[in-house]
Length: 557
Image (cartoon, rainbow, N blue to C red; front, top):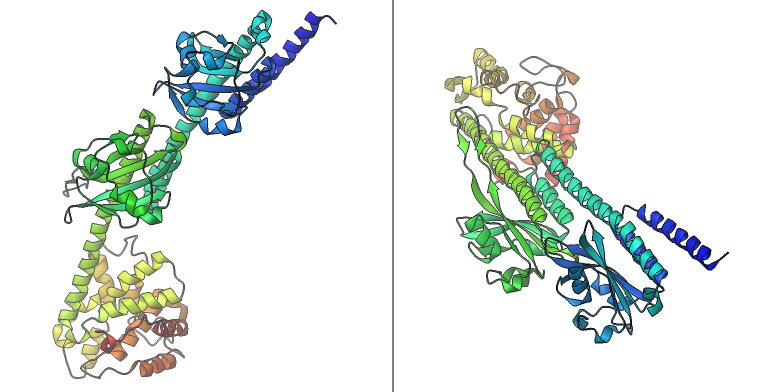
């Protein structure tokens, strides 16, 4: 076989290996193997590979071979005008250097391959459609390599073959990143429709921000206009526990400027920005280097019907801190973080509205039970205590949070039917006549009718908890009222409220008997558990009492 044939077979093998490398869709893997092949083909001792960052007009170290100490350079950016790499990038043509140390374009401050004694260098641009997209530098290669036109042609062929794959891998990586970001936004939006847990949603949103932006930490600050401060509401990423309860005066810091003006601000070196508020880093131990800060602009929300709308306003700000690998925030980062912040602002505003509705409904229920107390002053506070006791029993029985919520509401309303019972009967201090007692026995039925007449009976939030109103005077042996239900015909919520109701009736002051001691009340409950009330509920209230969750009327301050 002739030398020419041998070389031809070698070139075919090299091109075959290049094709195998080109099959990789992982950009970092592709670049790493590409530089290895070029170093091997040229018999070089070391090499570096840069890619062009168009957004910042810089070259980024992607791969460094031959010097372990110089691995620190990976990910660093240099200006397009610096060093031999910058010169060749601008020139758009390869350059061979016989003596690196004496070349006027060699920039020693970059410190490339500081652990090696450098002599020769071959620096070539990675060209795509007439434009440089990167730079390859090969160090300490034999001088004769660059004197051989076939060798140079092979190097250029390899670079030409592989640069298109580099571009494909880069575009694929960017497309995957955009797709991941879009999926995150879709997931956040879908979660908005399935949960009202504000803090769970905000943690998810801000964790997505850390992951998708590639930052060390993110945080949400809310306005406290009464105190004139910004209050840290959520922090995710690096050491969030150190950020708890942090506050700063409104208008201070970069976040204060953003909240006050509604602007989005990016600062890639906070120490150069006079607005930077150092106190938070000093208190938390976190070191802020760069920051992307956007306002939390709660959207206008149409409430529907005649209720009008909640107007749009800035309720705080969100921060993303310290991108990994020393990179800077770009336009795509800003767009994504603004979208995430918009979702967070919506979550916060909806949660505030939901909280307002929850507070309103709770106070209305308290007002209704207060009206019952006004009609029957001898049972003042009874509805609230029965609610507390019922929830404690339900917790001991291991019921879920949704059921506990319904029990809390329904047990407060268990005596609401007494509103329709005449005052002369409710306030009578002497024994009731048979007719009066029959009227009093109708209050469970009146309670259910009250819910029905006010459109409350079929609310999802109440579920079947209306049975607390209907059944809290039913008894296991069938001798209760109003329907004389027996055994399993009585719902669990009816059984729970029955025990709570009896316990409070025994341990409270009434016109027809003084309050009895808790120990005596427990004895009565155990006797009733033989035939009339659910023994499981009696055991549960006893366990709750031992835990300090049950306080009788006279035990309250």
